[in-house]
Length: 482
Image 1: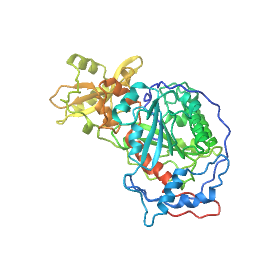
Image 2: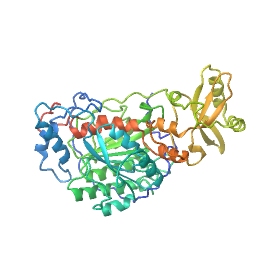
Image 3: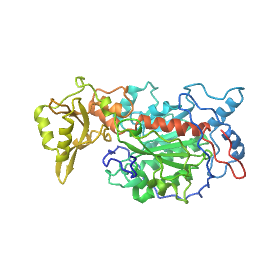
Image 4: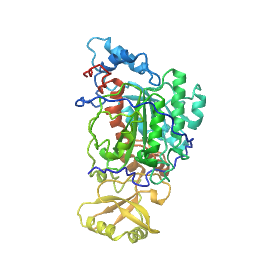
């Protein structure tokens, strides 16, 4: 059953080292009206690239003058569309070809990159301020030395013409710090010490526009669901106002990693674009846009849009056991009997009953557990079901997730989750792990699920850039068929 509340699993967002600035809400352009949608067009999954739709090419002629605050569509998109249109018989791109270039802000260990590059994108520049995450990124990807820039984002806008600055890009991706937006982070919002780096990111986007003559055609933000409700929606409104001022309309969706992997990890994605608006979804309370997003999307003082998208996969109810490392894997370190006994002593009645029930099964059962403090008393809570809890970083004992093994005729066994299990639950089973376990836990616990990003890239970002999401008609026009 889909949860209808913007839960973040309470403590799922650690403090990052980024520090930014606060900004008052800027003035807003009027909202753009939408047209009545028709059924959603079929979308092919990458790497079988979808056909290039002539819709943007036809609309480009109508908007070539570009109204104030609404830059013309990206020259990259125009070149691609024109090149394909000039070749008789060409209706699709070569299979697996990366069309669009990405500047990846707050890149961490590069899991957003893995998702984007499975969906038709190529990350050409990345930035973060955490040296250990940079080391993990460089240990996994084979990039030129100047690909990943270890630098404070506040310095980038003021030095936009530096060789270290982001290159021209079609997509700017930003997984900016969630610390001040999470339920566990004090909820200071976009004025907070860490999450205020959103404003610094938009400063860089504006500087890229001044330098290149155009800003990236699409912006994608990733954060916790609490972004939408922080300060009763005022932070989301201020963020959209800033994007509007830069010439973008904005859409907001929520997507749980549990739709792809056995981990509960709901996240919010804001897709902003200065391209023509695709066909609108007039429905309410959907899987991607539950009713708690209405405040953000129905505010007529800001320019938002609900793009008609395919339904995401259903939430998974199992699968964790299939990902567990083998009991005799060298990285698995089971606790000794004394430590397990202490673990059992900190189980509540309902959790002891859960252990006893699963301990009567002939096949081994694996569950994840967190250590909580209830009424000042530490206690272990075992998840009910074959799905892991939201992965976190290794800061503090309550942030670590334990693995509990139960089987008939066998003693209870407990251990910490391995780095490889973290990688599997984040959709990156083959990621090159560092030697230090805690470094890996910090990197994966502070990242975004690869599969969630891949779904967004394949079904929203790439079709938006190629024009295969049918655009809404201009006044006096009929919708162009894909």
